[in-house]
Image (cartoon, rainbow, N blue to C red; front, top):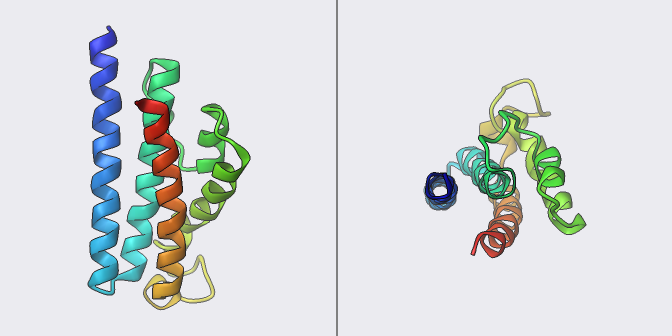
Length: 130
């Protein structure tokens, strides 16, 4: 029913916000690659919250944030940020997905850039869900 869906939406959003906080904490402790993993997760879970809102069902198990964004009718600027975060799904996790292993590849600058992307997506999502 409606209440169950509303609860699901709020759970996904709450975890997205927790992921954002965890990402930030990882910047503070200089675990930049870990922060990027959590910024990507924040964006993914927040977009999935909108998916539940619009579709009334469990979101698809995909990590392509552009595809998720399209499915929820996100505007171009959100899709552009989603694209930048989607790439990190592999480069932040696997030693052979970027020119350098994640721990070397992700600098404070890169982490801060992805923070802005996640922030913009999260704000857009919160606006949809209110």
